[in-house]
Length: 68
Image (cartoon, rainbow, N blue to C red):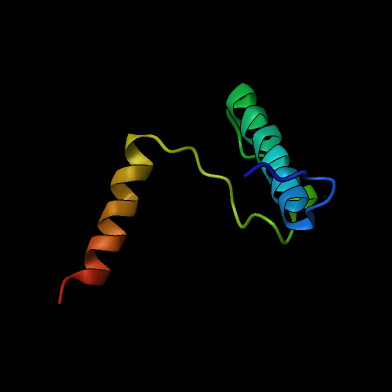
């Protein structure tokens, strides 16, 4: 089913959030430093580059939560 984002507020909001995320992600990739998230305050908590190190750190944190 095709939904028109002009007539579907939730889709319009999701499209806006995706656009901001793309802008911030592109800025991070180009500058290789932490980007200012003030424009996305309340939308994004933080922007993380998923590389080997961040994946291993995330796996270790989540693994320790689930092992009893």
